[in-house]
Length: 186
Image (cartoon, rainbow, N blue to C red; front, side, top):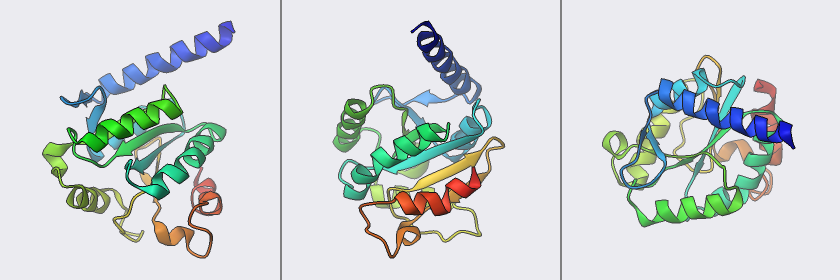
């Protein structure tokens, strides 16, 4: 029990240090951090873990809700820093709904939202701009949701998944896609 408390304390302390080093700012609308691609790189660089995984999410997105438990499980099993990245406007009601939904699933889940000041407030345009920025040139740029974005300790984006990575299997189960596309990069 003492080890568990110590681990949780150290983990929370680390998250605070990483956030301070990256100079992250909380959204004026929610109690979560509003970030951009530079912040994502900084979070990965300042992680105590070898890799950091971001999972894009929208409360309205059925694949996002279905794939989320697998993303959480995969991150835990592979000792990844894990963040759920909301693509809504910071003050959108759907952002508030998503935060509530995510906190019910896992109270200590790391939730961040894309900055309105950088990406705008319209979801489709916001996602399109963000995905174009974060996706390495050697990967196909498809502005869908329920993406796994994997970064290494140097802040380098190793993988940005898209729906085609899960082609040929049941769309509701992304386990094989994660095993084929993400696991080999760890």
